[in-house]
Amino acid sequence: MVKAIAKTSDSIRKKHRALKTGKMVEDAALERHFRPIIEPLQKLVDNTTDDTSSPLIQTDEPMSNADDTESETLSPQREEIFQFLQILKYTCEAEEFHS
Image (cartoon, rainbow, N blue to C red; front, side):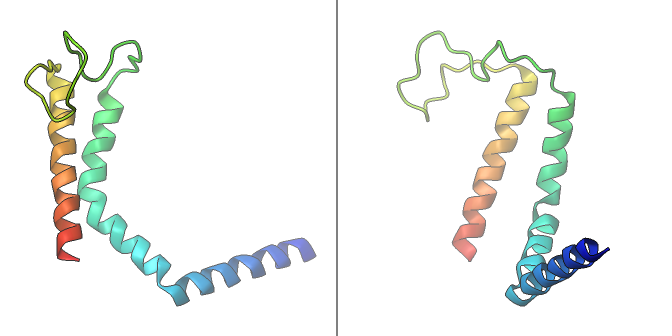
């Protein structure tokens, strides 16, 4: 019983500290902000089979430049993931620019 009270007391103390620093508010805001991004990503992950033998990007030759996407061939599902990640990247860059 004493251990449970001590554990609860520590938990309350941590939550109070987090509220004082605004961490819980910040976490909730981040969750609300990124929920539209997280949910589609989770659906893609759920629909993707666990095929670890094939790489995400298949090329005929080693990539000399990471930004050179002309020689890359992607499956339709992986192309969708790639496009979504590009949108995510630009969204994050725009958020950093505005803050």
